[in-house]
Image (cartoon, rainbow over all chains, first blue to last red; front, top):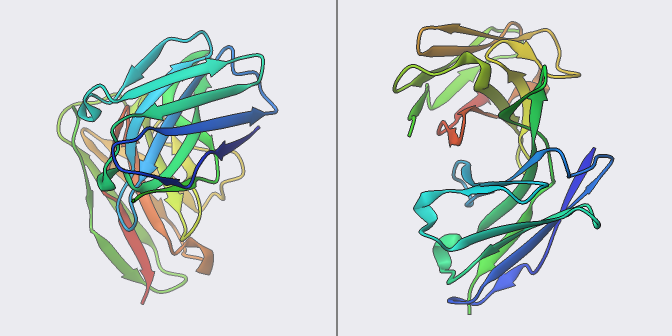
Length: 121
Length: 104
């Protein structure tokens, strides 16, 4: 299974960050898929998760700015983050939640390579 | 939310030595969902341990995980040069702040 993030590397302040994660080697239909971000030199922040069916959950600290969607026909899921500021500058990763003995867990494997998104005018 | 506190912040050791990294949860958590990741510069995190003590596919057996109450430990029995990296623990949607393992 491989995941690959894509999208603009530069976004202007107040605009919307849009990223896509393309999955190969697995169907997205029956798993949860997660977005994580990491500002330079800092730790990991969970952004949210989406199931292939469309069920989603987001980090409340992002105050309603996050929307995720899934397109099973393209084996892709997407992230939109509105009203971005410099604080949203980070490497963004997509990852899959693993299932252990049929139980979905929040453990993430594999991860995409990450994409750097810079918020700047 | 759960707060995961990792210690130490930085650990300086030599190849061949034993590394012990700690992750303490703010309250009782399920060991089923405690994971450890390794991250090298410029790379994505890689899953090492899931369910507190199970090694992920392809992870060498020098890596092991354990739990005692709300304290979780990642142990590297004998450090190899490629083990020097940053290590994160995770429980549900929360990550620890990381431990940097550096060459002494």
